[in-house]
Structures are given as structure tokens and as C-alpha cells.
Length: 95
Image 1 (cartoon, rainbow, N blue to C red):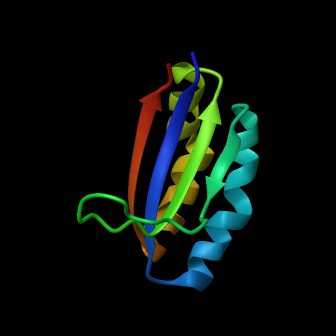
Image 2 (cartoon, rainbow, N blue to C red):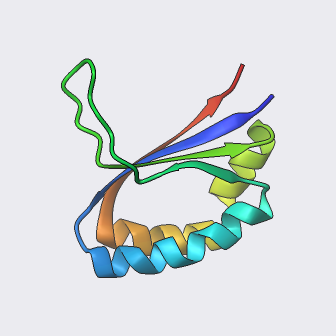
């Protein structure tokens, strides 16, 4: 069953964040991840939560999604991301 990593980034330093963006695809590919959404326009239809830069990555299964998020290189890049954005990351199982 597919699993999805969903990320919302509120970017505070675009220059530093760009370093993360340049390097994270290699880690994503290691786990077979496929970007479905990568920072496109988001429109709030209900509620008062305002998304910022939304990313959705599809993985073959929950194990691959967790492997991606727990990868040591991901952790290194996440430190760069944390210096340049406030981020919420969740994993959701597909149907």
C-alpha cells in the first residue's frame, strides 16, 4: 500500500533553503519516492490553517517512507532545512 510524506515549509531564509532543495531529491530517489506536489499554489477551501510551501512525496509503502525520513543523509539535510524554515512533516498511509 502506498504511503505519502506530506511537508509544509514556512521558509524564512530562501538562500539556505535552496541548498536543501538541491540535495534532497537524491535521498528521495534512494527510497523510490516520487514528487506529486512540490511547492505549487495552495488554496484553502475550509478552515483557517494557511499552508506555505507544500510538498507531497509518494512511496511504494510505509517502510520506504519511514526509511526516507529516518535516513542519515535526510537528517543532515533536515538540519539545513530547520535553519531556513519552520516545517511540519507527516506520513500518511494510502488506501
